[in-house]
Image 1 (spheres, one colour):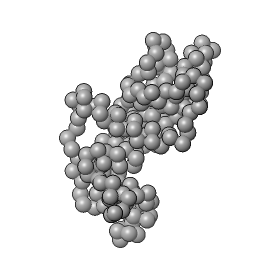
Image 2 (spheres, one colour):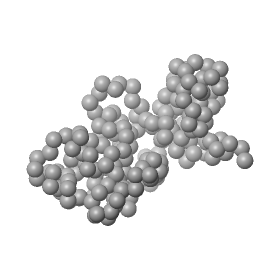
Image 3 (cartoon, one colour):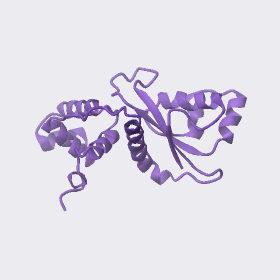
Length: 191
């Protein structure tokens, strides 16, 4: 089961706060059981967390991150969670797919809420860098292929992420596909 909300589906307000605190400070998905890595819990909060179903939280951020020294990840927008049955195993092999799905789900929720930003415009070079990044190439590899420096590639990718209002390369690729700026043939090769 997937939920995409700013707060989790619990009546316990304290558990909602426990859930959002780590989500607002993490760029990457985390297991609900890993909340203890982010903060020390009171015994009652630990029991509430232990009674919750197993789940994966995927924080969604709307801004780029240029200041790693910040304690709170700026641009936190929401958190999408995937819940499993109590006692069920978490499908670790599906976590990358969950990250893609969470990004698409959040975008869908924003469209329903009519908070959809204008379509981003990319320069041809930004699009070229985005396509090669979607193929899994590093900044260095992209630079060699395009005849530009690794720093310039990084700047193009960061500019594209800013224009799309996303914070990770995965989110950039998903948005590019969702807005028809990328085609699967761009990523997988011409077939």
